[in-house]
Image 1 (cartoon, rainbow, N blue to C red):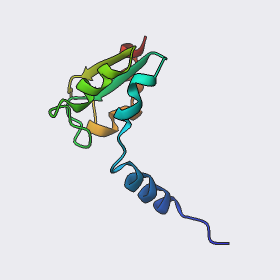
Image 2: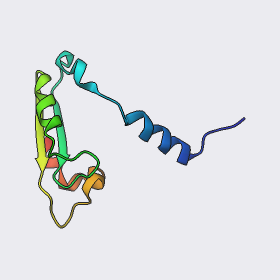
Image 3: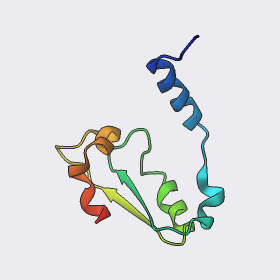
Image 4: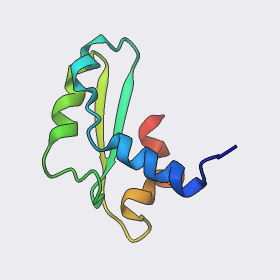
Length: 89
């Protein structure tokens, strides 16, 4: 049996997300949704304004931009809840 390695899993996930676009069905979401982004995120940079604009399609959508700080790690800040959990309370 040929099982994928963790590196294959990462590559698959990265490639699968390349053209992922949830915008078409955002208006169908009934639950409260908070989209948290980080000011220094190089993978999902806030500058184009796409996330901030698109989350408004969700009936209960909210956008939060976490400012850059000396404690964050750009895109990896998502793994540091101490820096963003207050926005979800």
